[in-house]
Image 1 (spheres, helix red, strand yellow):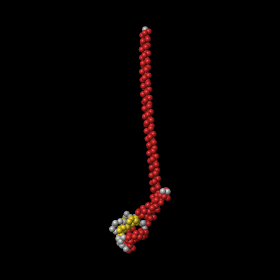
Image 2 (cartoon, rainbow, N blue to C red):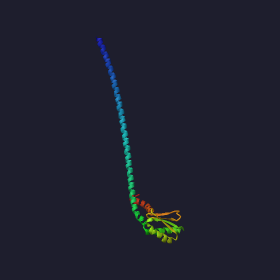
Image 3 (cartoon, rainbow, N blue to C red):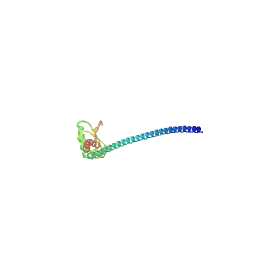
Length: 200
């Protein structure tokens, strides 16, 4: 009986010991797997955070660049607008003068004289249609007598003020319209205006 009990005890102890070892091995393996899962999760979380930080930084840089570009463009547009207003105000009297009958008669006469002195050719004029009733008799009588050659006049709705003049053969024209005159004056005024306003 003692032998049987001893054998039973021995088998029990060996089984218990083996069970404990296997349990410890399973527990150790579970701990390692859990640690690997936690490590992988931490690495993935860190990668997600790093990506989010990079995206946030990229977005910040882009927004700052866009804001800077928008502010530069707004400043340039404002400066150009101020410059245009000042130049337009300065040019307005010149544009008005190019629509005045007396001024136009004087300037047409002076330009036509230069043409007739340099070229013995008949001239062609394009004038504003709005001034046809007052300028047509002037061209036919006074101007032709003054320059001593033929002058042909046509009248255009496209001209608000000023005139175009050239040889009758149409080989070229000189434009002294209110628009071209204003553009010419504006080209001289813009650099001075920029310097006064913006120190450029």
